[in-house]
Length: 83
Image: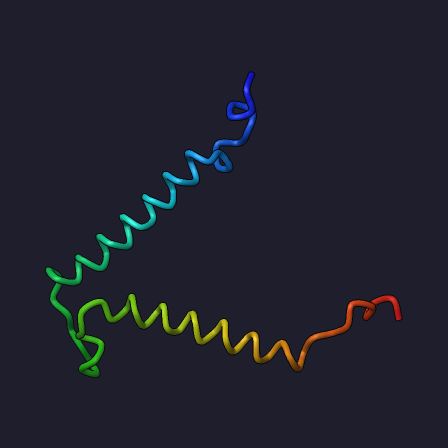
C-alpha cells in the first residue's frame, strides 16, 4: 500500500485542496447572495454590499492585533513553571 491510502482522509493533500475550494465556493455564494436578498439596514452602512463579510474580516484582524498587544503584558517566561 502507498502512503496516500494509509493517511486519514482529512489529512490527504487532495482532500485538503478540495475542502479549501469548497470553503471558498461557499463564501463566494454567500457574498453573491447579498445581491438578491433584500437588506433591512438599521444603521445605513450595514446595508452596503458584503457588509457582514468585510466587517467580520476587519473584526477578526482587530482581535488578532489586540491579542498580540495584550500578550506583551500577560506573557510569562519560558521557565515560569520551573521557578
